[in-house]
Figure 1 (cartoon, rainbow, N blue to C red):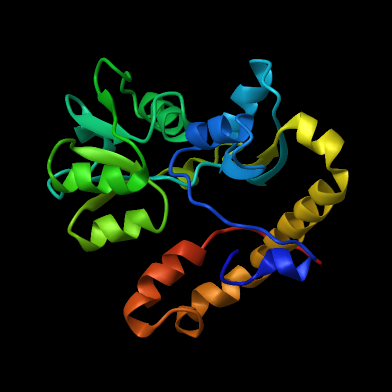
Figure 2: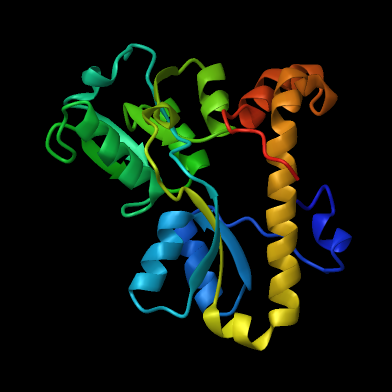
Amino acid sequence: MKELDLPRKYGLDVDVLFVPVSSRAIQAALAGEIQFITSGGVANINANVTGADFVGLTATLNTFVFKVIASPELKKPEQLKGKKVGISRLGGASDFSIRYALTHWGLVPDKDVALIQVGGEPEEVMALQNKAVDAVILSEPFATVATRAGASVLADLSQLGVPYTMHGFGVRKSYIRANRDVTIPIHESVSREHLRFQNQQRRRAERPEKIYPPRRSVLGANVLRRDVPETDP
């Protein structure tokens, strides 16, 4: 977003910050430190249903995007029994996703498989490399980073086809009421550019060298490759 200068395209002056975990981003938004966030949809929903001054405006991803990345010796999800799996944060999207998947595979979370709160996805990669856990739940590009270092892909949770608000765009309700002139252009910029991204990503995934240098082409393709239907502008 920052590299493409999308906010300025819509007449906005925006600073883009990285906050590694959705729940932390929600806390920062509620404290007034940031105005808009993109986060795991579950964080937006949880904040709203608990009565916080917060609401999710969009759902830009509608299923799990995580992969279960494990130590090289693990090849099947059933082998997670008796193992430790690292997640970003208890109660977050990675936590919900792996609990659903484990149940789907006939394993009982917290009984058959220990779920360990590690931090953000970079911390999950380090925990796996340091053998603090046996597997982790990662989205791209971190899944590709981990597999390039020798880890194995146990499962792609997007293939489960579970309807789920994976990613959303949220803001404080009070901010919307007081700043509609800012909220509407921000929402429009996110929605229009997400639509543009959907319509172009198949072509980009086929030719990632147009976006990424050759040494990063595989990573670029994995980030951009999604089985999302093309949508008319």
